[in-house]
Amino acid sequence: MDGLLHVSEPVAAALEERRAVVALETTLVAHGFPQPDGADVGLASEAAVREAGAVPATIGVLDGRIHVGLTPSELERFTADARKLGPRDLAACAVQGAVGATTVGGTLAVAEAVGIRFMGTGGLGGVHRGFPSPPDVSADLAALARAPAVVVSSGVKSLLDVAATAELLETLGVPVLGWRTDTLPLFYASRGGPPVSARIESADEVARVAAAHWALGGGGVLVGRPPDESLDVEPLIAEAVQEAAAEGITGQAVTPFVLATLHERSGGETLRANRDLIVANARLAAEVAVAYAAS
Ligand code: PSU
Ligand code: MN
Image (cartoon, rainbow, N blue to C red; front, side):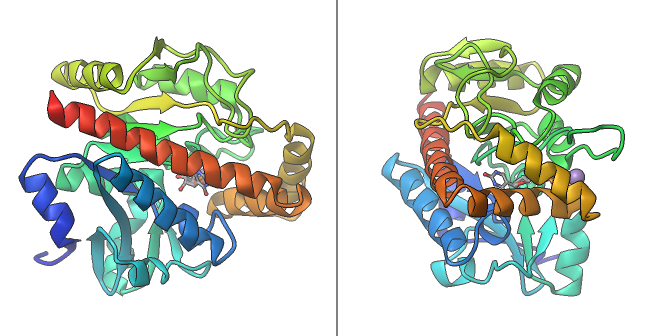
């Protein structure tokens, strides 16, 4: 399996020297936004990570290898026709030479394999509305329970059943830390979510809680950072989720369909909000990684 993982030179050097590294996914590049917005969001996230003093490691599958750290021209290859890769999909995609964009779960599986402990994203996947019909629970949850990594998100994507997802995170033993808040953010909306397991006030405090969790043999830690600009789009979400069901859209296709429908029906408002929160979360993940490296 030599050569299955390709770690870019800057990421390899940073890991070797125990400097701060932040993993970023490619699913939101390929499937979370129309092109060229997806690649722009990816590049803006990488820039935010660098500004905070860390090295970005954007992850995806190209040409038979799992890449950790992408060049801008490699990032542009993650278009809507890329496969969407959860942890189960990585191996087949690499062996078959397809282009594959990693979800949060897929990214965490690779991050664990190479020793990266921090990641930023938009919103975590979770229990889909209507469970158990369909019986759809994002693989993000199982991956987060296992990988020793801090994931900074704006909570759980509110197109899901957020309350059920929060219960499952407790069952899986995942600490849910509120960034200067007592409740889990609702992706586009900052308020109204379930309570967090602990509120934290600084990047250094997140780093210390994560280090303690890992010293106890724990895995993932979720940090919920409220979006700076809060949007109430619940009626649009309910409409889009219903349409997905009526059109027979299931499995991995549900989240991209709902996000795209919201981007369209909100006149681009959710697209702007989603982009801004992703970049801000990448920056905070880098600040936590820097604090951890300094400790
Ligand atoms: N956050 C966003 N946009 C996205 C996602 C997260 O702002 O597109 C993606 C992530 O890759 C996450 C995935 O892992 O949605 C969850 O998809 P599913 O519910 O099919 O597991
Ligand atoms: Mn699913």
